[in-house]
Length: 322
Ligand code: NAP
Ligand code: 8YV
Image (cartoon, rainbow, N blue to C red; front, side, top):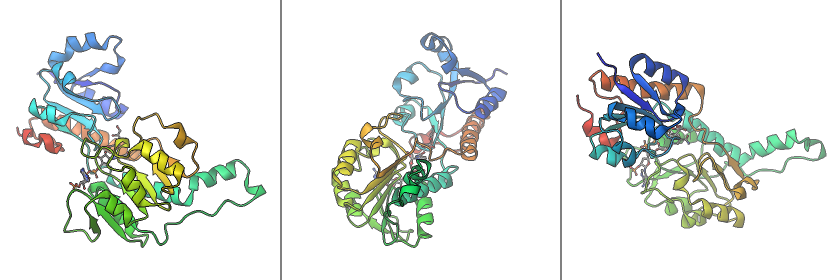
């Protein structure tokens, strides 16, 4: 029996590569000197792709070169790296890695919130720079007495909310629709949520509907003591407006795991003391990345074994029949 041919544009983890090589013929595009020539040669035989969200957009121009493609298995829950509507129109199933990273990303979001409010990285720099012997570290803002707003009360948003509950502060949320089965107050716009809270945590998907959802108006509503935490996608926040709001003191601080043009971070943010900046590490523990990789492998194996894939994205779920 011929082995299904899988294209990997950019390297996933060694475990994923090894597991896929056991079952499939794996083409490592990133190792090719002439990628166009390589794709022209193997493209017609490719039936599956294993992709990471960090390897550029998989759009119509890719699908044009892969006429036999059946499935794109993506490493990450957010799949803004794939044009899922185009894939659906061409009968290509797309899978992502939901669920297995909820706890890890929620832990990171809460850590980033505390680090931002209590200025933990700044305090660490204070000790390392041997400034402690010349004075005490300035007093920080606090989570005490605050109200926390979550923009995007989905799988990860709810997992964050559970953790915030333990801190004993009130929680509210915004999404496109009210959820009847949650105990948190609902606001129908991000600005209304920001006006009634002192911390806004953003955890929605990145797409055209959420682009710059957090804009000037929302930042102004958050107010001078307000803190923005973004663990979603850089494009969900208008980064220029955020820089201006931080510079003008319109908001008090920000904790950012994601940026509009990763890995490029605006110089203005690097120069600020009231921000904490992370290199998109929400899910980046050894264990969680392994679980995500395994789900990529499981989706491809299930599909080519003739079973439904494990975690299809909604746009292509109707294609998940065998
Ligand atoms: P999810 O379960 O699908 O939840 C998404 C939530 O966003 C839903 O509650 C949805 O509620 C809300 N939403 C969607 N579109 C919206 C809009 N236009 N306006 C307002 N709310 C909207 O997704 P998840 O698993 O929690 O993941 C969320 C996102 O987090 C991912 O897509 C990814 O971009 C990001 N993420 C980042 C990291 C990291 O490393 N920093 C790691 C994992 C995930 P409604 O349908 O009611 O609007
Ligand atoms: C990963 C993520 O950093 O799952 C997501 O949507 O943003 C993160 O878990 C990313 O997928 C790595 O490629």
